[in-house]
Image (cartoon, rainbow, N blue to C red; front, side, top):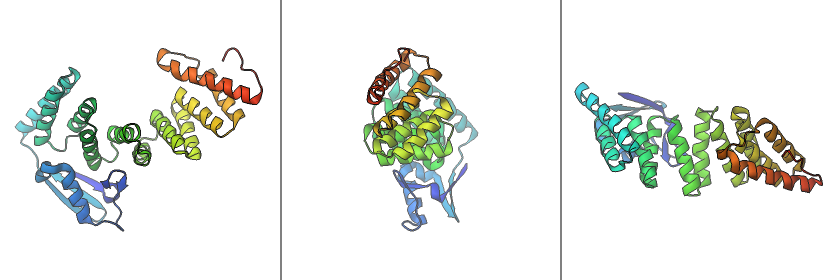
Length: 266
C-alpha cells in the first residue's frame, strides 16, 4: 500500500509543520522513521516535489486476513476491559499491516484509558503522519495538550488542524473557542462560539459566548445571548443541568450589572 502526503502536512514536532526554510527532505524522512521505529523497516519513504510517498510492503492475503481477525478480537477485548490483551492484539495487527489506522486509533484509546499519555500521543502522531485529516487523532491530541499538559498553543494547533478538515464539527468549534477564551483571544473565541451555535445549537456555546461578552463588559450582548439560549434550548436534561445552572447564575449577574430584574422564567 502506498500513501502520499503533502510535505506541508508533515509535522516534525508536536504542533510544528515542515518548513522548507528550516528543514530538508531528509529531515522529513528521518522524522517519519523515528516515529514508526521498527515498523520503518517495512516502509519505503521517498520525496517527489511537494509530496512524501510512504509505501508499505504488502502482507500475503492469508496474513492480512489473520491480522484483521485479530483487530476485531482486540476491539472486543478492549470493550470487555481486557486492555493488555487488546494492546497485544493491536500490535500483532500492525506488525502485519502497519498502515492500519483502525488498529492505531483503538490502541491509542486503550493507552488513554490506562492514562499512558505519552504512548497515546505517539500513536496519534503516527496516525496524523499517514492521514493529516484524521478527526480522532487531531482532536485527541488537542485534548491531551489542553487538559493534561496545559500547553494551549500546541492544543490550539491540533484543534485548528481538525477544524480545517472538519468545519461542521460544532462541539470541536465550541471546545476550541473555550481554549481561545482561556488564551485571551476574544475575537477568535467569538467567531468559534458563533460557529458552534450555527452548526450545532450547543448550550455550552451559548454560555461560552455570553461569558465572553460578560468578561468584555458587554452586558447587553451577554444578556441577549443567554435569553436566546433559554428560548432556543429550553431542554434542561440531566447531562446539561450544570451548564444551565451556570447560565442562570450568569444571567442573574448580568441583569444586576444592568440594573434590571431577571425574568422568573429564566
